[in-house]
Image 1 (cartoon, rainbow, N blue to C red):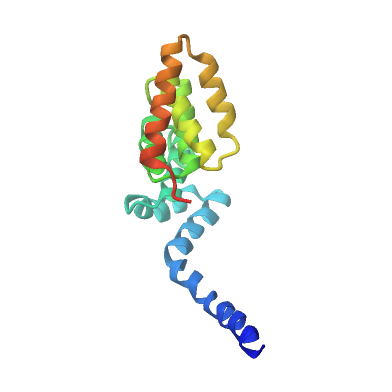
Image 2: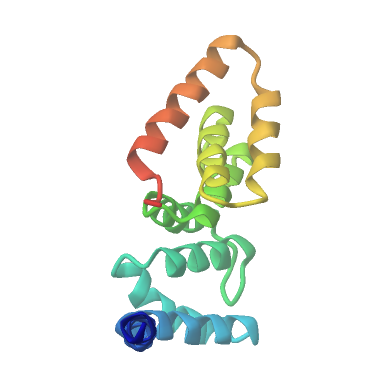
Length: 166
């Protein structure tokens, strides 16, 4: 019975070290998030931009949102789409949903209900609760069965390329 008591203690002792291995990148993102949440968008951008350029999907999505909403800079939906696409292609569900929304409205990208559906469907499957309404609205906006088939095909392709591993 002593072995049964000691093994769980060893497992618990091993876990505290694991978060510290991921801390540097996460800590930097959280610093940017803190600046963002306090309204210091210039500081958030200064922190997130190097992370985003290095492939950090949450930072990419944050920058995309800031460009979309004009937070600390003029609204620039082309730049928003650029950064949201990068986040989306890294499997980031919020970036996927926001990119789908840009396609739905034709904001910063050409209006495309097929792409809107596919990106929002991927986001929903990735756990974004808001993506279903975007996906459903895109589906209802399609004018032909061929568009619906194309949307389903594109969604399948995007799932194969950009789904976040579970």
